[in-house]
Length: 479
RNA sequence: GCGCCGCUAGCUCAAUUGGCAGAGCAACUGACUCUUAAUCAGUAGGUUCGGGGUUCGAUUCCCUGGCGGCGUACCA
Image 1 (cartoon, rainbow, N blue to C red):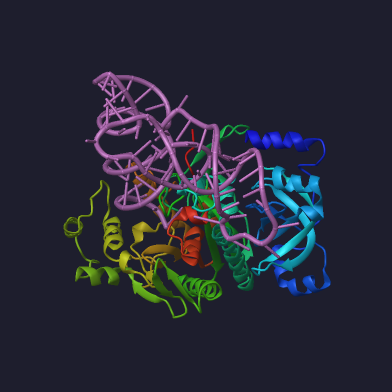
Image 2 (cartoon, chains in turn purple, red):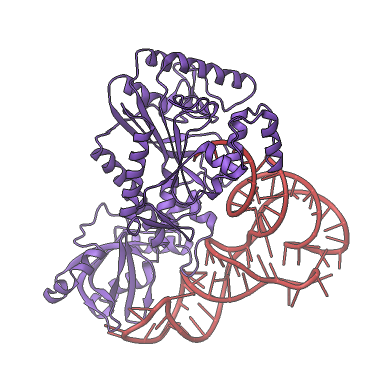
């Protein structure tokens, strides 16, 4: 750094180190695409990027310059540029500096597309060096200093560009399905729509506690009450819980709601969306995730929650007594927690016995009631709700139900949640009177869906860690 | 939360049983007019994550704190 600052001293008076703009005529991709013509006509191109290496041979110098889509090599000759200008590029410009070069395009003996530089200028001087080029950055530096990861690794850059393309594709899918994209509050006086602990904050002017949303659900349903028939939102949710390779405290959730639909309709939508993404970003609807082949082109498997469980336990657990369930939990070494209800035990058994086996895209349907306080009771099965979860590679990708729209039943479910909360369950949902009031005005039959976008991206770019698909994953402060 | 592993030059990593802290890249000086991880000769660069302890002597052993990775628990 000291050396670089000294170079700036030498340069300072004569050259602008941080100019305001650069008029570039071609990106590296455009130069490559039009190379034949540019070479034939000896067109002068203006190209810009970051210096990634310097290879000098005395009176000439080769400099790889990277731009977003790749890069080009620049060729500097002392004979062409003169002593003083050559000294600037040879001695005063460093790896990491941003530079604009202009000249004609040619190929070297070794077939490398190259710009023969006639003029060049600083676009920005770097006073810290780039990391070493042979080895990958350490995992910590990749996540903590993402700009270096992006500067050094084209694959990383491509991964995040792909993330953006996937989200764009999702938006066009919903546009074609005639859903309206909306925005709902991040700061909420009450949290709800999921079982999770929230982050809290404080509004000074109103002197009140506010919560960062854990889900968009209750606001989107208010819009259905208001007569917007198909709405969706892609938004950050915040959950005050642990972090691991599939969890970040803030994450992106896709939620959508459609009036007059039930969960069967939503299953169709989910399948259409994923198939489309797999066709666009995979190989004919097939994806490889962690070495496992996944097929989204075929109709997704469907299995009822209780049937899948019965399959693993050798008997139907619908009528099982609490004692029998406790025995089953013990048999499979699943820890028993205080206040665990019958349905929670079923859920634990399901997680342990069934989920790991759900590799190909599979809809699990018709869950026990207690676990789903916002879902409508099943039209033909007692004690169950009309709900599905989509599992792929053993993890949950989507969650959906026929939305509960009977305000009296919703109030009873909220009261049950309140009882859980008073019993010490800090993930239970509070009673949302404002939401109940909205329901009392009448919500049409509605299908709802939530999809964890980061996990969907992980699946589509074959990443095993959520950090790899988040530009700035949550990290503890360095000091 | 808990368990295991790690933290050494700007970056990526070495250092035998506790005995002078090293390499490659980056940097600096010099040579070289088509290089591709350019090459060649030389130079400089360290609070070994912080604090404490054991020892004649600690990067190394012990305690403690910080950060990271992996596993595990809850959750999407």
